[in-house]
Image (cartoon, rainbow, N blue to C red):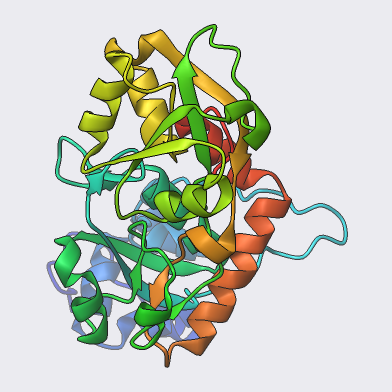
Length: 321
């Protein structure tokens, strides 16, 4: 009997049983088809079938995708611990100033607070680890706004006084403007009472400077009091006065002007807490004790380590502390 018309020689059942691969491939339709494709010579000679030739070719592997590059980590030194995360702010405060008393406080071209007091406050905020914002407000609203919790600290040339202490607390002073004498250049005057005897000295009426010079020179000078600084300057320029006495910062500003170029300081600066007060400090709410303690400590530090002097010298040619 002739075999099936498959195009290959028939394979005996004995040969199938003897070859384990053929037994596996012959079990089913897939095996029959694969057998039909096996070259006749490979079976006729009894050679072993190479299984790798009967399997489909392996799918070529894809090339590895490039991984994103990471910046190299900074190598730690032997025994060095990683830097700790930054500490959170110790305070969140809003600082207010008037912005109309240069060079102590003013508003820049962008409407932001600037000046000596603002720069000092920024430095103190860093020292006490405070996150600080700055606000501008009219003078008459500074203390009411503080008490209403619109802001937390006043840095606006607020002089310490017994009347203000009834409502708010103060830090230690952060500046105290000295008083000084001014006379025409070459006058040869000295501030000693004996050397000012019978001299005509002008002062602004109703000020602590007027109180001090009247008490200290009442039997020596011929004191004249004026309603405004401008009137006092005009009298000196007209030869109606031999000297004037007052706030050294204000007098310095006038001396730098064209009109004031005629004159100069003489004698020593005058500081008298009993008459002229203890100076200017930051205004706070009475209940903010921790903030007050932190600011007091920071003010002491910047004065001691020279930071205060660096800020001072940017605005004034003499010390105001």
